[in-house]
Length: 263
Image 1 (cartoon, helix red, strand yellow):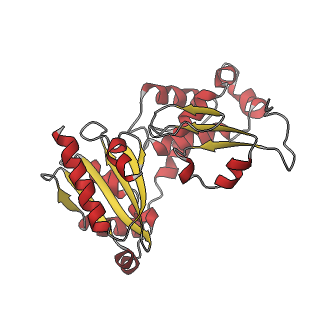
Image 2 (cartoon, rainbow, N blue to C red; image 1 turned 45 degrees about the vertical axis):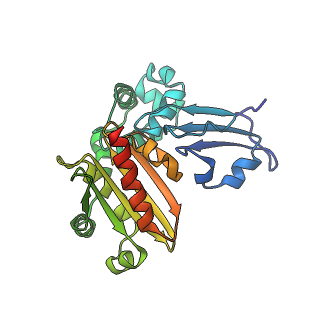
């Protein structure tokens, strides 16, 4: 039986995989495959159920799942100063809180269990005001890039869907990287007159990285992307696809949205 408290030697070790729905998307797959034991911590509806122990609970933040899987009740019952100095690493609660904060957009998307985790982390000494500063580090250059990208958004499906299609040539001309375009789908979805927003970005020649956001009800984007090899959450999903005909991929996605809305 695998003992997590015994340090592994060079030949035997265990792995913990976080926030990864499929083995195909895993960075360090070769390490996972050679491990003698594995624990998977995830929050995606599309999780394959792999690993010796699979703790997948659909939620807004994977950090929340990790928090609830650990024995935090014992620590939260103790004095916070003792907790932070003796029981756990002094900054551990901060990192968990940071992960939850960013994955939920500052608790914009938060369920009861999320707020319960946040409350317990605050009891352990997390300083909300300090960690909130990590969400407010946007520069003028970033805002200018976002403005340029938003001006290129296209409406579809009776004006209820908006998307961005950026090929490699255009990305290089605009100086756009994936980090610049990734949040745009969320901005589009959050518009009062939109129900779904998505982006298609040619990361390297022939490989497209796509991000989809909805409210999870108008269209379940996890179900939307399954036929294309993508997935994630009902309200937030992604797709990485190699194709020589991205316009056809775009047409197929829009067609599937139409079909799902008609069902």
